[in-house]
Amino acid sequence: MPDVRIKTPNLDEIFEKWKLRAVRNDKKKMEKQFGTKGAIFSLDAISAAEYVKDTQKEAAIYFAIKKTVGAVPKGAEEKIVLAPRVVREIFYSFKGEGKLNKENWKGDEKVPTYETIQAVSCKKCSGKGFTEEKCKTCKGTGKIEEKLTVLTGEEQKKEEKPFSYPCGVCFGTGTRKIKCSDCEGHKSVFKYQILPVPFKTVVTGIPVLHSSAQTKYEKEIERDLHQIIEEVEGIRFNDFKELESKSEASLGYWNKNIKKTINSAGSDYKSHSKDKEAQITTQIYLFPMIQMFCETKRGSKFEIYSLGSANKFMIYSNF
Ligand SMILES: [Zn+2]
Ligand SMILES: [Zn+2]
Image 1 (cartoon, rainbow, N blue to C red):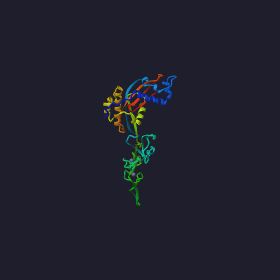
Image 2: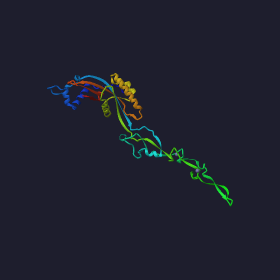
Image 3: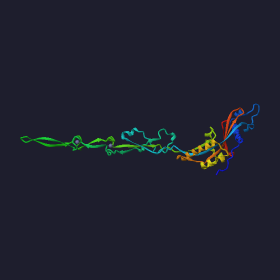
Image 4: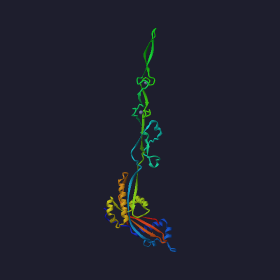
């Protein structure tokens, strides 16, 4: 249980660390901003007492999450079309292709999938392609019934005899085939599915930083912390409730911005905990943060930030 108050680095230590780094990065600039004409340039003469005009104690909260990206919403959409319309669609196949890299994919996230094409027997015509109705010409009998005149014997006695022959419209079947209006005579309709493209799910580590100092280095600090978290000392918490109740005592100072930052970090943490594709992979770190407002001998203003405890801290500056 972190009940102990964390020791914040003292201003001289922060300034010293900044000074050494600044001179290493750009000695000429240091000489120009802090040097004295005619005198030999010396780092010793540049002191926090002289050039730090104001300081502010702030805090930062850090945790990291793992997030799965590339997962596509599940669920298939099905389409049913007439046979001649199948070829008008463009189909995709991923069979034996493995998972795809989402970054390389050009196209929709859900596509008609070739392997799902399936013929479905037409319900209306029971897969025959036609329906039958009684032949109008023979009234369904299949026969044409007529009378044939026969004159019998010397007297030529007129007699009428029945004469029938197969109906030429229905070929003697008595029924006529009508093209089915549902399948247009193709016996089947076709269905296929529009499925999510099988993307690889990539798990990435994402650092999350909330700081009460209004610094433009937030992204940079976030990235650095992600890599060197062990080199910066903070107070670790397993849950946010604990952090909320102990942060003031642990830091040994407090302000409105810190309170606000803890609240927004807390709701951020909560939403990540609820996110099914995210997983929080670290404890929650609370870091003391010191913001120093400085001015060079030449009157240029700049800021130095420190993050971490007196034991282990890192610095940022816009000098
Ligand atoms: Zn049909
Ligand atoms: Zn007929």
